[in-house]
Image 1 (spheres, rainbow, N blue to C red):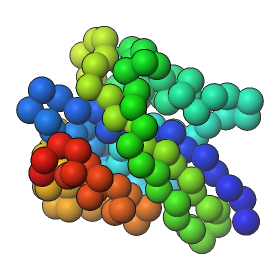
Image 2: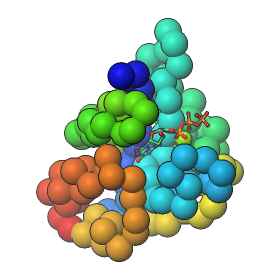
Image 3: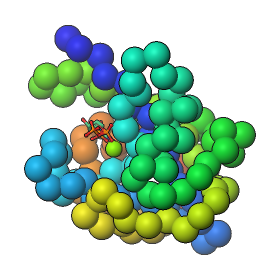
Image 4: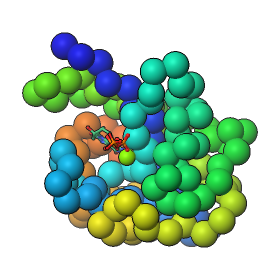
Length: 134
Ligand SMILES: Nc1nc2c([nH]c(=O)n2[C@H]2C[C@H](O)[C@@H](COP(=O)(O)OP(=O)(O)OP(=O)(O)O)O2)c(=O)[nH]1
Ligand SMILES: [Mg+2]
């Protein structure tokens, strides 16, 4: 099965809330709430892919030394195997703006289960609660 590498990020604000974003209509898993990010392109470093996606999707500029690895998701979808490292980021430049998603929301980690997420994402919630204290 095809392995798809996706780089994703939990942006964390001063109130220890995490940014989730609602996937666009017409895309796979439309309407579900995800961590911003996207597919790593051929020959691209995952960190560079994440920095690129955060700029494309949210309009922010992130420096690589502001990205800390937290955990990863590995999930078997019907047509591909997803491998998705999740970084944490508490510092960025610019204001977060909604560019590609249906909606953005800042939520405390212990409220993430109120928002339907892709099945791959569920195991990422406990490490966020551990790190940020619910
Ligand atoms: N970004 C992101 N993708 C996720 C999450 N959980 C999850 O299963 N995925 C899946 C959905 C997609 O199959 C894949 C990432 O796709 P994407 O649509 O974000 O990719 P992309 O930004 O590069 O967009 P595109 O150019 O392929 O349209 O990973 C998540 O939390 N964040
Ligand atoms: Mg994306």
